Structures are given as C-alpha cells and as structure tokens.
Length: 140
Length: 140
DNA sequence: CTCGGTGCAAATCGTTTGCATGTTG
DNA sequence: CAACATGCAAACGATTTGCACCGAG
Image (cartoon, rainbow over all chains, first blue to last red):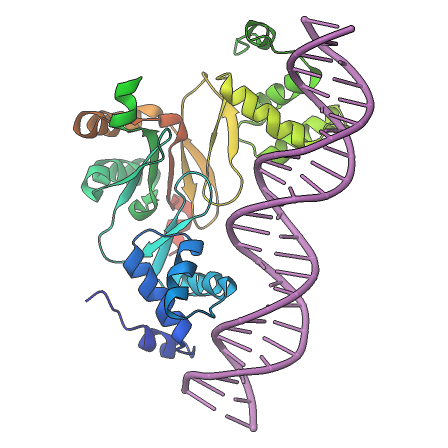
C-alpha cells in the first residue's frame, strides 16, 4: 500500500536496485521516526555487513526520490520517516524529551494564514514544536 | 533598555563578571540570531584571544541565567538570541535557506489549542517552521 | 563488461572535557 | 588568597569524502 515501488522509481532514473536500498527503506517504514544510527542497527539485524556510510548515502537518495523525509527534533541527529502516509507534526517536550504527534488539521489554520500573508507554503510534515508537555508542566 | 544588568545577575549567584561574558552577551544582542561560531568571530574582532570553548560555556551560562535562548533552524548549529525582547518564531525556507520572523500573535491560537487539548505549553520563542518561502514558491 | 554502489579508513565539523594557569572578588 | 573562569589540547560523536573493489544490469 505504501510501497510506491522502489524498483521502478530507481529504474526510471537509471539507478540500481540493491539489497541495501530495499532494507533501508523498509527500516524507515518499520521504525517510524528513526535516526540514521537507529536505522543502521535495524538494518544490521538483517544484513550484518551494511556500513553506516551506506545508510547516510541511501537516506539522502531516498529523500531525493521523495520516498522519505527528515525532521530535526530538538538537538542531535535528525529523524527520518516515510513520505506520503500520515502527515504529522511533532510536539517535543524540552524537559523530558518526549515526542508526540499532532494531526495536521491543528496546523491547517496557521498554514493558511502564512500562505495568505506571506506566500509561505508550510511543510507540515517537518514541523517540530517545542515546549513543556502536560506531565512536566504540572510538576512546576 | 534590554540590559537587565548582567553584573547584578551574576553577583546574585556568586558568579564572576568577566570581559568575555560581557562581550558574548553584547554579541548576541548585536547579531540577532547567530551560531556559536558566528558569535566567536564577532567577539574575536574585539578581543582576539577568546577561545571558542569559552563561547560555548558562556552561552550555556547565559541561557541558564535566562538572558539568551537558542533555536534549531533546520540543520547544523543552533542559533542564539536574546530573551525578553521581541518574542518571535522563525520561518525557514528549505530551498533558499532564508530565515524570517513571525510575530507571536500568529501562533497564539495554536498555542491556546495545544494548551487546552494537550496541556502542552508551547514555547513560542523556539518555534521554527519549515517550508517554501514566497520567492522560491513562485518559481516552481 | 561497464558503471554505479558499497565498504573501509581517514578527514572534517561541531561540541565537550581535563587540566594547568590566570583573574575576580 | 581562594574559588572560579579561561585557554589550550585532546577526546568525542555525527557525518562526509576518497578510493579500490564488487555486483547489478
């Protein structure tokens, strides 16, 4: 369902289908949001010899092909997730680090206003909002 | 006006006032949003010997004191800016990299909804929204 | 058979840490 | 004078690059 046929997309560009590319794409689908390192670990469980370098290069390729995207959730490494499926934005708690998702509808009015007033097309899938989550907020 | 008296805040905590701390704080005010590296360059123009390590340590301190904050605008290094003054969020164009500011009012309704539905207190000053700016959007 | 893809090692970039010396209060 | 701050060098984690070998088409 979510498979937009990697082999075909690759062939269309004269690129080659390799086990690594399939495995990385699968891992991105399985893990939801994952850092390159996490993807590396996941892929290794199936194919032990895969190098982290290949993960990076493949992610760049897949992003270029429009199959995955990445978001920066606060600090550290970016996280990758599949394109197309459930568009969603992220809510990141600065205290406990928890990440939750919010539905795109919540951002729709904001996106509309930015488009109208600024001509800015908001990329909802990449939105990360920082703040304090309910749990951490109560304590204080 | 924006000077909330660094010397006093430091003294209140038993910390010391040094030339470096004053210079870094001034640089943050001057540059608006700036990366540690940019701040280092700016400070160096006045005091050549200041080490990048000191920039990092000082930024951490100033942030702890509530005088500055940082935001992650897409990739790479965080950018620091003064606290207190104009609270603002950022709009980052993924194509040309341009960063513009938006007034907090635009985010107020969203912040309100998140607070009500999730108990999530949005930190407006840290918001970075990614998308395509007007100029880049036209072309496509 | 050819060219793109991969693995490996080394280079790079941003940031952090340990330690000896310098400076503020 | 004592505690704190700084500079310097080395350690680090994440990502990138160069190059020789391997495998898909």
